[in-house]
Image (cartoon, rainbow, N blue to C red; front, side, top):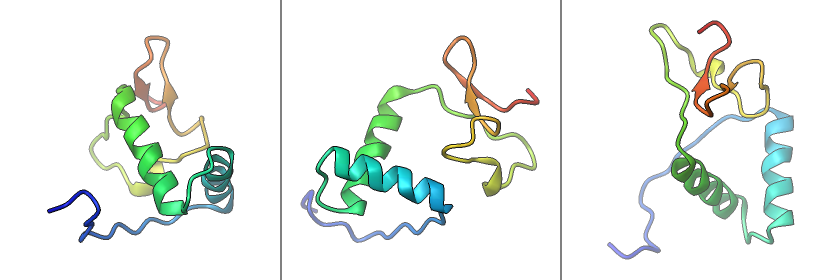
Length: 84
């Protein structure tokens, strides 16, 4: 498969504030589309490490993009939930 072929579709729901953050990133970095901006953000995130670990009973709504009270880096740079 060529790098330009993308047969898989991923649908996500964003709050208006999260979508605005994606749009701001897109325009600040002159990305050609929302999809390109999201792929670049995913690439950067995957390279950065320090991921939030999902606990038992975690729900999708527990993983926000902008709300640092939901998840944020610990002092050592790892992601954790506030109740950890």
